[in-house]
Image 1 (cartoon, helix red, strand yellow):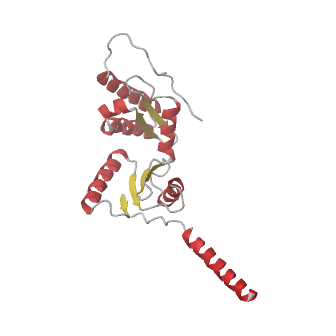
Image 2 (cartoon, rainbow, N blue to C red):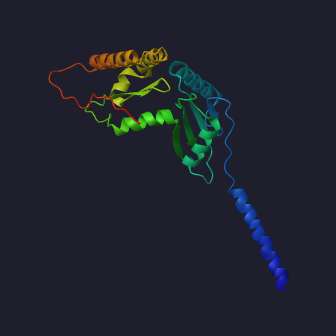
Image 3 (tube, rainbow, N blue to C red):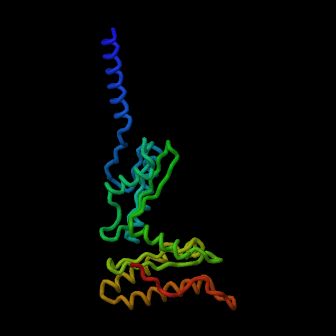
Length: 222
């Protein structure tokens, strides 16, 4: 009797272990086929197509890649853990620049995460570290240069970005990168600063004596 009971216990434990193993299996990362991947049916075909067009246009003008992934749940992983696996598998962004971004939504978990490439993430980190956002009119602008990659990112605070938008910043970035590619680093930097300054003067004309809220000195990161 005891022997039979032990057999049942061992069998039950084995089933529990197998069941736990199955439950713990990670949610698979879907194959990247388009800029919009919706595994929940939240977006209809027309909405997916419209969003795909917007992201394609953004990539054509800016160069950076942005994709959207909507899944039911990340399972037992946090959205951060799942996001890292997606980023490793999909490798969004230009090679050597790492400026891609993944908008990840876990619908049933009610969680959202934006997984950004190291290049863009670094620019945002510097923007925050230097307190570029800390101005009375929210009009701080960071020109972030990756000279080794000849890449430029402009990160603007929400006040001035509403007035200018990517259509205003992107030509400046591309012009600077064009100068860098031709070996004109000083030319690209000076003309980029001049272009940004002209925008700020236009959008925020001087009203008399004002205080410079941010330092003007360039910051070199190692």
